[in-house]
Image 1 (tube, rainbow, N blue to C red):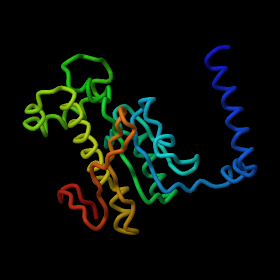
Image 2: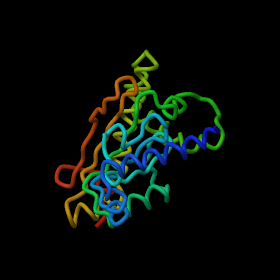
Image 3: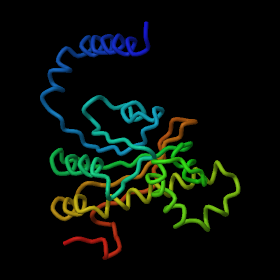
Length: 209
């Protein structure tokens, strides 16, 4: 059996199991999508949103990219954010990075990696902002872990800079923004930063009317 054929077979087994537990599961799921959360995570196959949060299909709206970045020119991410905030009315937006991230580690080098250089430049910028702190950490794994946390904080701040979030904050005092980091070694999510409409202060130059 080819590997992709196994995926199709496993899908049938999964669907049958769901119906066995709840005969109306797919009927109900097909009629409504009302997740409370938007998850912006890394594409890494070891960090699946539903599995590590023990949530069911329909509970989390998901966007994934290399190193879970929120880039102001990324129309894909911005389209997902707009739909989640303005149409689905999510209450929380979570940026989730993970320790041991290949994108973070690659951004810490001077290697020319081709097209992805442009994407990783966003992480290099975060490194530059915090270079004094990071260079002081001699252990490279610990340095990468700290850069992962700082990058997540930066991505949450990037969310707060968008008109999408600012308009929702002004009109409806939602969503709450969260920055988490997942530990591959222990499976635990670490809460790094939280921002909301009442307590968040961003530089006036980024504020929209």
